[in-house]
Amino acid sequence: MPYVFHGGIYPDLHGDTKNTGILEMTPPGTLMVPMLSCGVNAGNHYRRDYEPAKPIVRVGERVLRGQRIADGEKGKSCPVFSPVSGHVSDIGTMSLPDGRVTPFVQIYNDSEMTLFHGTENMRMNKRLSECTFEEIALLIRRAGIVDTGRGNVPLADKLELASGRVECCILNCIEDEPYISSDEKLLMETPETVLNGMKIVLKALGLREGIVALGENRPNLIKHLRRAIGHDKLFSIRVLKSKYPAGDERLLIYALARHELPLGKTPYDSGFMTVGPSALADVYRTFVTGVPPLSRVLTVAGDCVDGSYTVKAPIGTSFSDIIEFVGGVKEEKEPSSIIEGGPLRGHGIFPDKVNEFVVTNLTSGVLVMSEGSISRKKEYACINCGRCADVCPMMLSPHHIYRLSFDCRYDEAVSEGAALCIGCGSCTYVCPGGIDVSAYILHAADAVREHNDINRFIDPSFDGSTEIIDEAEPEAGNEQN
Image (tube, rainbow, N blue to C red; front, side):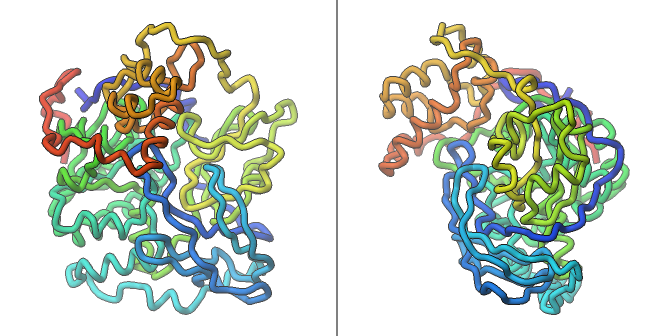
């Protein structure tokens, strides 16, 4: 029996991507590279706001592929690199799908793809066994690698927070959003890059074993990774029940170890660290070649395009160029929304603005949706049916917190657990009244947080251990080497 957690929902995953492998996209003629590449606010646990990197190039200057074009400050931002060779044609500001505004550097692609010679200096020219924590962390920081999981935190920051505190590192391979399967495709085609990246992280943290967490709805991936791991004792596989939001790291840790993370605590406080496949692949490639991440593997899908595809697109590629790359919008369809990410946690943009938004290193998917494929409910008053409480993975009472937030009683809402909300939207998904319950809960926590008053709701006596078991215990057969 798979590992489980309380609540959750079972949305239709809408099938797999076409059996075409990862399609590598030729860089377009012009790319707009955003300077903000980390720190998206997600839920209520990673609310740290990162700053944009500072451009160090000028309009008219020639740049090479892999050349740093913006400096990042430790703990505040990440360095940014040019994905192509060419000339800087503009520097300005742009909006990201999550609503943040960032500077950008626009690069006119000369199509030569000349590699910057300085990337050789970033490569680790020694055996992994000889590398120290400081050397590995510095390599990852200089490459600007971001773990595109909860909070989108720079991986070097995560390593420094985890060093000496964690006893277990989890490779989170669970994709629980409908349509999105970019990590699965990456693991199916190049599992060695991800597993070798995991070995580098384990070496940095001084750990001898890592857990590979997978969803039971990916049987082919489970078999494939089992073969790739073979008899390597560094890795063990754990299979989780396939329901949303199984990929959330707090729920993942609870499902695997039955350990809750109290308000104000991070996974590191409980001895855990999670990391995603794409970040680990970037770590390995930078370790071996010295070339920083310049592209992103993402899903392109929706009922307005002909099927689902996995595309490797350069950072800074516009959504419109990506949609055209997979064949464009169907003639008989009219998009009503473009979603960056998945339909449950992603960010929607208007179709007429599709040229203004670009791929970042955080983009997991671009969904092109028609009006008929998007469920829009008319909003009615809450009837206290309790469905939201049944599916809440944090075991809150969303309908009660919603009412408090609706009445602007924010302190009371936080006292009832609003700050524990992970923003998964399961409550909104099942609400028969069409109420965006999750948004009201997050707003209550934000309102208190704006006054730096959230810490007074933390219970310092709770260490996170729990005896709450709401579903069947996993059987021993789910631990596989």
